[in-house]
Image (cartoon, rainbow, N blue to C red; front, side, top):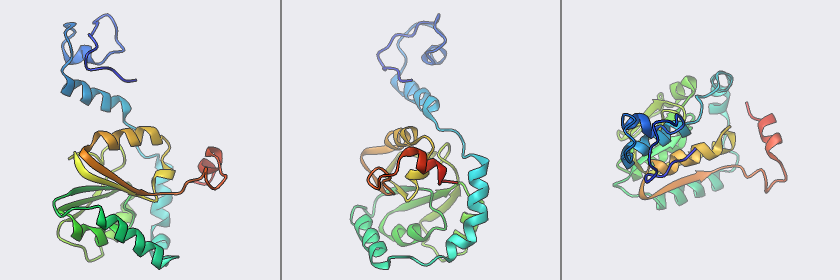
Length: 203
């Protein structure tokens, strides 16, 4: 549910969170307070335990898998790097074992790489990484703390989101003006696969 910053709060209605922000005074809610409340309403659920368990169990095998198409992988890194600036603060969602973060962090000022799998991050932290790269345990409920960011990266992870519209809304809300979402993901519609197939084949 969205509320306009110009919508007057009616203390008789308990569905408008701005009433609480202004003590039920019926005055216009401050836009900054209202934005914060909207974000709380739109936050996706925490990562389901079954997903965390799956990726923890799969982490070592995932890390050991060779890159299927090294040329395409390098092309993706080159394209992403060309859109980054040395002054950028970057957030990565679903960093896995950190391979992309380690390669792209030298192109920015600060890179925060997040994942909800402790085992994925355990492997990431064993790798030699730039000093401006920080790994953090977080899901899409807490990954955006510390924003806004100049760029937000989500590589091969958006197709796994159970509530993609909410995640995209939060990404947009935590980008600086003119900020970028850099993503590479499966497009199941183009492959002739529907939403039901996606959820049947995700952990």
